[in-house]
Length: 278
Image (cartoon, rainbow, N blue to C red; front, side):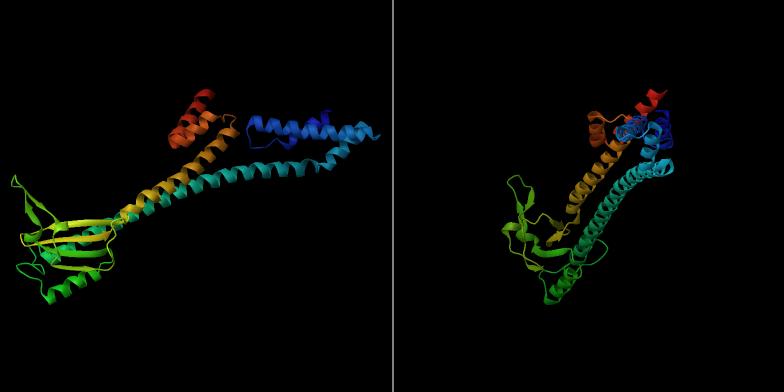
C-alpha cells in the first residue's frame, strides 16, 4: 500500500525528533492505518476506497503534519524551559547565599565596632576606657548601642581581673563562666542550643573583657545551598536525560553521569557523541 507509506512519510517529513523516535512513530501510525484499511475491506469496501476513508479519518496529511510539528515543538519547549528553570535555581541560590554571607560579614564588623565604642581603640576613646567602674551613664550608652544593632542578643562586660587566670606554667587564660559580669544587657534569654547563635569574645585592654552573643546568618547558607543545588541538579539531570533520549543514547550510565557529575557529565556525553559522528 504505497499510498499509506507516502502519507506516513509526508506526515513525519519535518519531525524534529531523533531518527529512532520518528521511525517508531511512523511504524505505529502505519500500523493503525493498515488496521483501519483491513477493517474497512472486511466490511466490503474496495482497497482504494478503504485507504481513502482511513486517511480521511486520521485527519488528512496537513492536519496530521501540524499535530506532529506541534508535538515535537512542545517537547523542545519543555526541555528548554526545564534547563532555564534549573539555571534560574542555580543563580537564585548563588545570589541568596552571597547575600547572606555579605550581610553576615557586615554584621560581624558592626559587632567589632560596638565593642570598640565600649572599650576603645588605639585611636578612639571608648565608653569604659580608663574607668574602674561602670557608671549609670555608661550603662545607658552601652544599652543604646546594643539596642541599635538587631543582630546582638546579649552583651556582658567583665572586669579583666575577674576573668583572667594564670596557669601553673605562667600562661594567662580567661574563664568567663567563673566570673560575674560587671554589667550585662540582653534582648532575649541565652540559649546554648540555638544553632544560629555565635559567641564573640574581645580583649582590648588590661581593664575590661567583653563577650557578646549575636545571630550568625552564615548558619543558613548550607541549608539554602543544599536545597538550591539539589533542585538544580534534579532538573538538569532530567533535561540532559531528555536530550540523550532524543539522540538514542539514553542509558543508566549516562543518567548517573548527569546526576553525579552534572555539567561535566553532560560535557563528556556531548564530546563522546561528536567523536562518534566523526
